[in-house]
Amino acid sequence: MKKRTWMCVMVACVMLLATACGASGDSPEGSGANEKLVVGFAQIGQESGWRDAETASIQFYAGQNLDTIDLKFADAQQKQENQIKAIKSFIEMDVDVIGLAPVVETGWDAVFTEAKDAGIPIVLVDRMAAVDESLYATFIGSDFIEEGKNAAIEMSALLGGSGKIVQLEGTVGASAANDRKKGFEDEIAANHPGIEIVASQTGDFTRAKGKEVMESFLKTYGNEIKGIYGHNDDMALGAIEAIKEAGLKPGSDVVVVSVDGVKGIFEAMAAGEANVTIECNPLLGPQFFQACQTLKDGGTVEKWIKSEEGIFRADTAAADLPNRKY
Ligand code: GZL
Image (tube, rainbow, N blue to C red; front, side):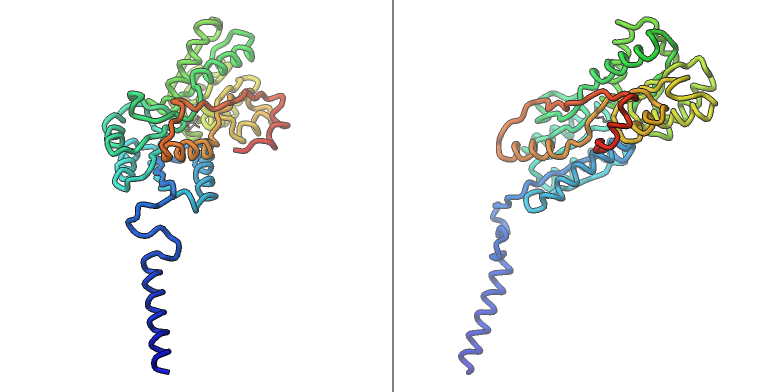
């Protein structure tokens, strides 16, 4: 009896020991055989519906692949210093790839160099950074200059080529704001001389600020304003509220052209309160993680993975709405 009991105790101990050393199938401690893709993502914040859709896309994809992806996610509350802190912590953790949407274009050289020196590639998502190409692996995102140009063409068509308009700009220093402004203003200057931008100011990509700035524009210019160009739909939706509160009709007295393609602007277009949205795809999760996996496996990716996007107008908004994914 005693012998059998002793044998059972021995077997139990061996099994316990094996489990403790991860013999249960996990990669053993320190073996470096961790097959998971470990990614750090420094997100800007939650400033717009578009941003929330992008965050959801990234987190959903990681959540669907828990066995192969370990996502470390940081929300910087729209502060560059928080994004830089997050990148430094990802370097400390020695993640495989660092992803971020740079809140502004400048101020990244030092921390990107730290990542490069640590052998950790950087993937830029939806916004560019003004750094040497050697400091990032790829940019996954849109052509903001093209978006601005298309917005100008649509605005001019809505106004028959002439009229006074105002511009709600995105976050100061953000590549999406800089280039949507450049694309729009260059197109107006080159091909639509009858369109006059009488005022232009940042609304920081938020609905609340967009409304506040539009209120100030309306106080100064009133019904002289025939159109508003918003660098994103959220600011345009804020402007629509201000236009209505000023007793004017958005979508007719004041035409509304913006960028993103969020559900809210489709609802406004279907209600006759907005006219055009230039799509900017936030559903970048799958492309992002595919690029990260390629980089982890030692492969290369193209320097710019460009999003394909459309232009959506009020006349099809009601039909488009059910098909919108964000
Ligand atoms: C565009 C993205 C912009 C969106 C805004 O790629 O950076 O930031 O257009 C968001 O809605 O705030």
